[in-house]
Length: 90
Image (tube, rainbow, N blue to C red; front, side, top):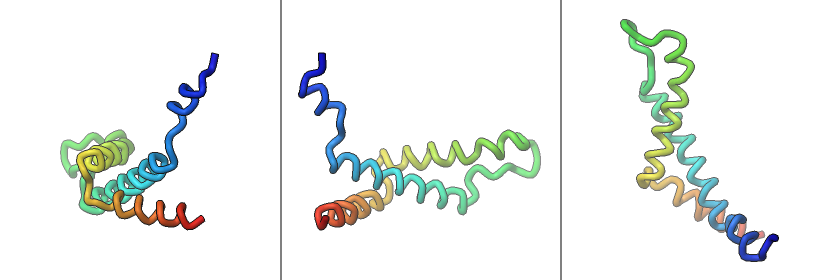
């Protein structure tokens, strides 16, 4: 039996959805910055080969997500407010 409270608990609020989108955008940005900084590049000697190259992006993205959870660089907060203003304008 479905209760109204159970339906509301499973559905994220509009603000929560916007904050989640902003955090995902910041994580994607940070992952690209980590890639540009050379994080995860295969060393010339004693590297893991093609397998290491294939999975380096997963490591960078996981590290970027953890950076966002720890407070990030403030980009997600700015994105959240911009998205909220745009959503409120509609």
